Image 1: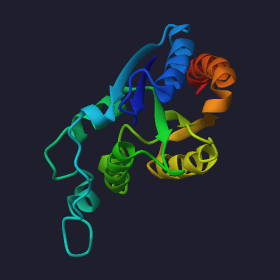
Image 2: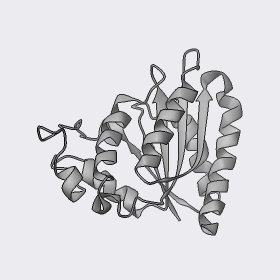
Image 3: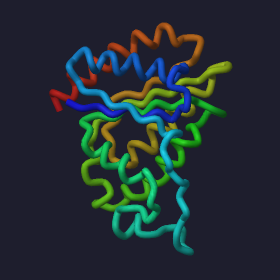
Length: 186
């Protein structure tokens, strides 16, 4: 099994990275190969809404016309058996880098060619809120809605706040191990 962790955070040592790493530890404990991608390090533009109707070849061909790192990341997703979406919560929402990527992904996934290799892929979402931590559930709902619309099989969604991060680290290790076993049964 191969898992891909997609980080919407710039900080590879922050709270979101720590939560995602706990999930990765659980996956690795089950002999799963884990790759990590930090979206802010990639060159991914926001959607241009190419035509007057707000669409483009994303709708007619299932691909995006923008020549950046988007397509390469889509190929990594298509090669993975499971994807872990790790989102740092700002303003009870998705991070800007994750939003930019998902806005384009959900557009190509409207077409069968874009959805190929993505549809049915197991996924887990982790939304980590700092500050008061109250925005994690709202962000988790948004992440699940978008990722499910793309066709992923959302196996779990885990809201985390900085106040319960120590507890959730243990939960996320167990969740990673569970995902590996769940994938084997599917």
